[in-house]
Image 1 (cartoon, rainbow, N blue to C red):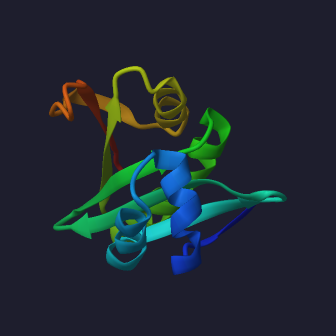
Image 2 (cartoon, rainbow, N blue to C red; image 1 turned 45 degrees about the vertical axis):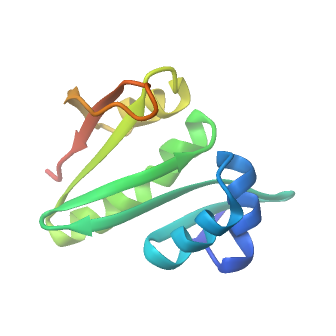
Image 3 (cartoon, one colour; image 1 turned 90 degrees about the horizontal axis):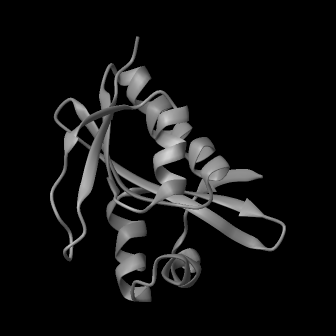
Length: 128
């Protein structure tokens, strides 16, 4: 599996993975750091993130648990170099993301906000 920067041409596949409109995913590619996992048959998952203050915020994470764990190496590697923490919100019911963050040494950091009626849990990773 190859991990690379997303390009505008990936927007349609990202939209398929998330159920979001293609234009929204195109804007995501332009506004955030987006890394995609390329499989033999195309993009299999992605992670998007940005840095604010001393924290890297993962804004989206898509893929199975193994792939999500691999994709989380991208923001954590950046954060470790910069001496920053990483935070992300995992929606209740997203077991792939929950499994990935726990295996990637993220710690539960309390409840997060609700999105469209779905509760979330905040996870945080800090460099050693």
